[in-house]
Each structure stands twice: as C-alpha cells, then as structure tokens.
Image 1 (cartoon, rainbow, N blue to C red):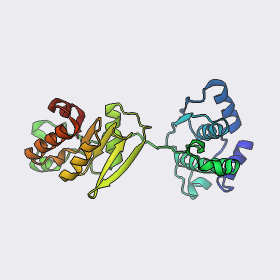
Image 2 (cartoon, rainbow, N blue to C red; image 1 turned 90 degrees about the horizontal axis):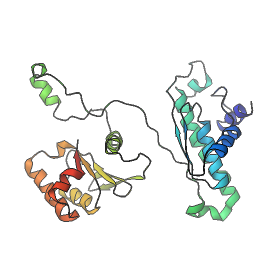
Image 3 (cartoon, rainbow, N blue to C red; image 1 turned 30 degrees about the vertical axis):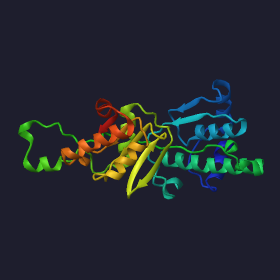
Image 4 (spheres, helix red, strand yellow; image 1 turned 45 degrees about the vertical axis):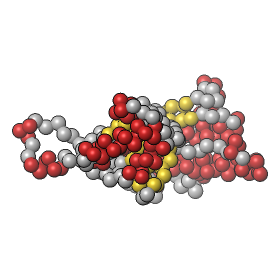
Length: 265
C-alpha cells in the first residue's frame, strides 16, 4: 500500500500501476547483495521500481550503481487510467517513472547540498537509454537468382531498410563490433552533415549518402579506432580510393588497417 501511494504521488495522484514493489525493500536487497559499483538487473521491471531504488540509493551513499531493466511491452487496459493518459503499455509507465524519479531525486539532492550542487562531482547521473528488440537493419536479400526481377535490383541498390534512422544503424554497428552500449555518445554537425562519436573516438559513424571530402577529413582528424559509413557513399571507385588515401595520411594507418577499421554497411 505504501509503495502504491508513493508511485501515485510521483504521477501527480494518478493511479497507473497495481502492486508496485516497495523502494525500501529493493534498496535493502541491493545493500545486502551488491556493491556500490554493481550493475543491477531486473528481468521483470514492471513500473521500474528497481531503477528508482538504484538512483535513490546512489544519491544516499554516493554509489555508482547502474541498472538494466527488461520488460515486455504488455499493453495496458483500454479502461485503465494509464491508457487514458497515453501510457499504452507497461514500458511507457516505467520509462516515465525513471524520468520523474530522477528529477525528484536531483531536486532533493540540490536542496540538501545547496551551492555544492553545481560541482560536477556532486551531481547524480540519472540518465538512461531505451532499447527495443528488433530485426536486422538490413534488407532481406537472400533470393535465388530466378527470383529476381529488374525492379528488385533497383530496390536493393541500398541494402538498409527505409524505416531505420541513424541511431538504429549506430547501435546495430556497436553490437556487431562489441562496443558497449553505455558509452558516452555525442553528435556534431560538420558542413551540414551529422557525425556520431562514441566515447570520443572508439567509434565514429556517418550515415549520410553523400559526404563531402571536408567531412571525411574531419572524421580522420578525430583519430578514431573504428569508422562506419554507408555503402551508398562510395558511388564511384575514385571516391573509395580518395577515402583510403585521406585516412592513411591523417591517421598513419596502413591500407590493411583502413580495411580492417572501416566498416561499410
């Protein structure tokens, strides 16, 4: 009952979820069975009480625990208050709870610390990323030769599915390359082109179909460990040769290293 009332208060007195777990109980479990830098995994996240508990406990003891919440997108009843407020499944409730809990904890932390809160060492990290299971970013091109027709060849000129965005492609490449999904990520624009930079150079990606040489030069100047580009960028052989030469000059890579460290999708 106490857990339900606390969750209701967090959602401005709206009753969106039945029988949430108590924060104090989950905090107690974490204290007993985890360290201050553990990753806490909840395979039945529900309303994301575990995430809320991790954030709360980190704010109280200065821990650096992280959480992974897993929840099937179980639909809410059309008659429920949650559905009428726009939360079509349980995952949407959990995500909003983490946002609200993080904001509330930061406000409480600021009230306690006062002027000290402006220091980076004192501010709690309440950020999180949301991933959904999906099929491949690439089109299914496994046809027998007799199954092809002329139009299919034009349609498969670009092998990436039309409904995928830059982040879909980026995180797919990160998984393929074994780059962990929690690394810092920033996007910068160079000559109107978006460049995605993971962990200041562990991976640099650009998914534009047409990239000016100035952008390629800028990517090389970042001295990345890995680079990802779309295959459609290389319309002509001379563009691929020019790309290789720029990277060899700016990074000191050999031609073999360029081929190894550059992924084309």
